[in-house]
Structures are given as structure tokens and as C-alpha cells.
Length: 322
Image 1 (spheres, rainbow, N blue to C red):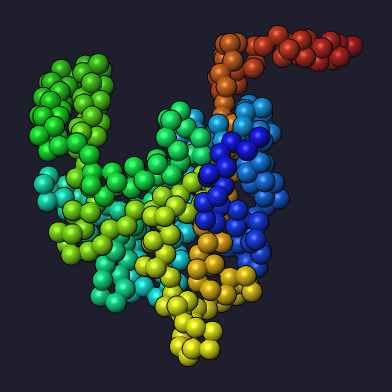
Image 2 (tube, rainbow, N blue to C red):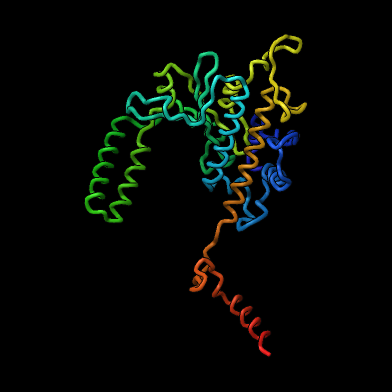
């Protein structure tokens, strides 16, 4: 059963099957490639503790997928932008923009400069299925709006900040564990109370901000496709017989990645596939704490006092008796 056909219809969602392993940048292991096939067919994980759980369901429930997929796409776009003729490309620049309302630092996922103009891109990835009644396209569009315009109000931020400072002062005075935990919770609430958005900070500096939404299959939404013109090599816009400098991918490129656009699409697809497989391996093979107590001699081994282990030890000792 295909879990979400709308996610598979996004641009470049299935381009991973067109990748030619011409270099390490485009090489996938056999298990990662077969996992990509199972992922798009809506099959189960097939290994680990979550053997019978569908991959899409595991993606929707785990934050590890979001983090690894986000970082993989970001890093691939940074490499693509640097190969596209940008003057400079910087991942997560922390001295680029300032929120004019709160004077807080605004950090996009990557920033680049080309032809005297600076742009910033912030990547966000979404699962194909969700408990929300909204479609994937609507969820990506809503996230794009939040990235641009922010959320909350400055008044709510100031109130949350005052409450956070009072909680932190009480925690420093008493140093009680519950007060320390409450102060940390108040700090998290303060950070989430208000976000001015990237667009106003970019406009204050005279720059351009671009959100980029992707699906769990590394499919490009409308906002992600709009960022390509800021990353692509100028040679991609030349006609077939038009003179000019064209993109050269070097030894990593093949006939399928002669243009910088396809080189970027293939790079993002491979990086995202590796990240999703790595996240599934990490999530489904996490340590399960059994009910048996830990061993006194080997405290890191929870199976030392299990019934099966005791039986095996007894059998081994019986074999040693002469």
C-alpha cells in the first residue's frame, strides 16, 4: 500500500533510481538502495525491533529522521551552491541577520552571495503521513509561511522571558533539582514564544530569504524549486549552441549529471537516502531495557541474570566436571 501518493508526486521524489554511481558522492550501498525501494513502496522496515512497522510510520513518529534528513539536505545544498559559482557559501551563519524587534540572532541553514546579492535558505523536511488532517502540500506551505513571517508576539516573548528569568533566579538561589528542571522548561517555552521570522531580518539587511520544503523522499516542493535559481550554475540557462561557461562536475559527474541542476538533484537524493537509512537503523536498533536486573559483575549487560543465560552457564559448568 502506498502511504501517500501526493508525496511521491513531488519533483525529484524518485530520482534516486536514476543515479549513476560514478563517484563516492553518488554511491549507495545495496542495503540503502533496497531500503529506498521499500520506503517508496510503503513496506515495513524489515530489520531491528521495528521489523513489522512501516517506514513512513516510523518516520512520522521519530525526530531522528527529521534531524538527519534536514542536515543531509542542507549539506548537499551547500556543496551544490559552492559548485554553482557562488562568491561564498556558509552553512548556518550566526553573524548574518538580526531580528529588529528582539535583537536576537537569526540563523538560516545556509547563506550564499552571488553577483553582489546575499541570500539565505532554510530547509524543512516533512513526513508523508501525519495525524493532521492537512495534506503534505498544505503542511509545507504553512511551514514556509512560519519561516517567513514567524509566530507569536513580542509581548508574549517579553512575558515568557520575565518568567524564565525569575525561574532561573530561584533555581540559582536554592539549586533544587525541581527548580532547575522548571527553569529549563521555562527557557524552552521562552524560545518558542516568539519567532520574528527570517524575512524581516533578511529585509533589514537588504538580503533575500528563501524557505525550502522537502518531503521524506527528498521531493522538492514549490518553495524548494524556487531556491534552485539562486544555486544553479549560470551555464544551465545557456542554449545548446550558445557560447559561454558551462557547469563542469569533474570526475564525479556523468552523462546524467551534465547540468548543475541534475547534479544537485542527484546529490540531494543520495544524501537524503543515506540519511533516512541511517536514521532507521539508529531508531529501530535502539537498546530495549528488559525486565531482568543488570549483572553485578557486568552492569552494562542486562541479560546476565536471565533464565536462558543461567541455563547456559550451568550447562557449560557441567561439561567441565570430570
